[in-house]
Length: 303
Image 1 (cartoon, rainbow, N blue to C red):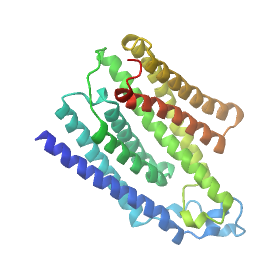
Image 2 (cartoon, one colour):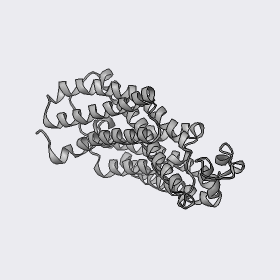
Image 3 (cartoon, rainbow, N blue to C red):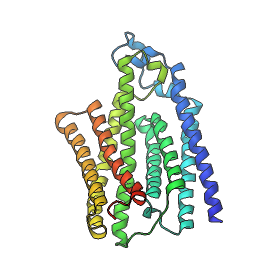
């Protein structure tokens, strides 16, 4: 019975994620018919008629059925995703945190939850264009690749601290990376000007820059805790093999890059493009750590 229910929840989550991703894409694509090019460029200092530009009014006036239904479908997809992960772990008789694929699914669920709560306050609805496919990718990864397996036992409190710190940290860094990517796309569009209306409207640069900083600031303490507990875990369980050395290098590189982005923003006024590139570089290092976890069963690094 749990196996059948997990299959149903997987299919429903798949359909909801696909629908949400399509609606987010259509919302961004269709916005060009609601927002004239001059208005999108006015905030960048290029439009001559500044009296037509009202940043506060644009997002609400541009609201469309797609933008209203897409978050609902995304939330339903996350609910189905969470149900699938829970039921599938019962089928496998292993806690989800013992599989990297399942942990990534949980991290994506945290990212979706944070996005759904923060999208109105930070005016970053367009992040759904990346968050929806992200949840879909991790759902498929869990379904086709996730094979939970037992790990050596440690203190339950220690495991809880390590797992929660990493899950929440990954969720926040995914949101920061998505915001940084949209910042670079929006900046490029505004500089070229002639391609603005083709890609539709995205949040203002200042909004995206603030979102990157807030997500990084919230995720950095969690990353620090994850680094500390992960180092202790590796020392106890894996004894410094090749795989652990590679994970440690990329893990510390992630921490250092994010720390530099936050430090240089505070001390040297690093914002905008440089902060976005630093954030994406840090996320790339974090992704390398995840790749090492994911390919471990196939390549057998370090024995």
